[in-house]
Length: 249
Image (cartoon, rainbow, N blue to C red; front, side, top):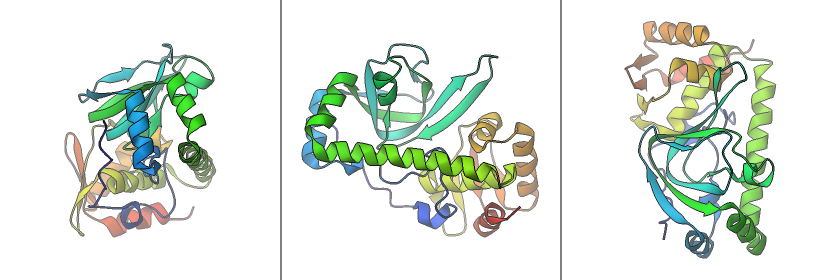
């Protein structure tokens, strides 16, 4: 049986993120799993199996048959896809409590993107048909799923609207704040975030160019707003980064 998702106690999105702005699910509200009752969690757990994926593991590949869904119990993943010209895009980040792969089973029948573990991931794996029947037979779970799905659409709509009126640097600042809210740790002065994402992946998530990301990170380092390591980032100027995110064009 899968244990309940542990509560996040160090930081909350309201403390660090930019208002209600969410970038591709990086600072979503309560995930699907956390919205289920203990009984619903037990029933769903009995329908599947648990698996642990080590950092960097590809959990499923774009184009393969979509036979099952993943319910993320711990850890986070990146959703990526390759364009026709071979350019790889990071479409979203998903984390604790999220469901992955359910739409592919219901629509295309094949994976529409590749899912890769960021850090260690523990997931419940349930056959797509069993998952669909579970939602049909448990009204509360069906409501939780619809709530999660509606939030994703709302986040995507907000993202598209804001891309019309914000700069790439603003969107990058918001993305870093959201990552800090979801995955950061530290004090009221600094927030440390493990950053297993390349600058190209950050650019893809923020909807900007790699050159913009490189230039913005360099500028913020010089101003003492952030410190960067090989695979980590520390926000040392939370107020300054919020002000950058909040600038109006």
